[in-house]
Amino acid sequence: KAGVTQTPRYLIKTRGQQVTLSCSPISGHRSVSWYQQTPGQGLQFLFEYFSETQRNKGNFPGRFSGRQFSNSRSEMNVSTLELGDSALYLCASSAWGTPNTGELFFGEGSRLTVL
Amino acid sequence: AQSVTQLDSQVPVFEEAPVELRCNYSSSVSVYLFWYVQYPNQGLQLLLKYLSGSTLVKGINGFEAEFNKSQTSFHLRKPSVHISDTAEYFCAVRGYGGATNKLIFGTGTLLAVQP
Image (cartoon, rainbow over all chains, first blue to last red; front, side):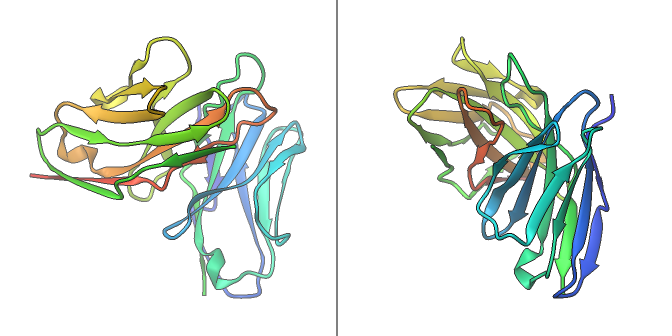
């Protein structure tokens, strides 16, 4: 069973640009979450999607957005990049429904560097 | 709302020695608890989880954790560590119920195993 796949793994952008990150969940998983990981702030929740609907959103500015497609694949977009957006962006998929233990399966992440 | 505290940012230990990584949580509702491990340049991998039942939980790679409701703790232990256990360890919590799989993570503990 394939794991969570994130693309690209590494990317470098300059301030003001925008970036789109992609995540393919484990087959059968309908829930996808995104987290930002930085040395200073640790793991911060960005958003969570289930069946193409955003179920939960973290405390990030509107420059951060996401979506989920009918095949459960998800993308997140960051517009007008700032230096502070440099981070490892982790995608996680999970099952949904009963019993729902909330166990998250993580991809290897997309490491974004903003210059 | 939930919160997690990992008091030790770094734990140095010699190979074959025992180790304990501390985790305390706060929640107004019952919780699920998790320990994840992150190796350099990788995503998070689930070590073990507490859902209900026995308070002693065994996970992969010889790790175990004990849920203590009265002390709101979920400390991770291993009787004998190896060099390969060097990694960052994250404790996470999720409250029962609610239409979300959002996990709240601690700030992480870097386990540094020395020969």
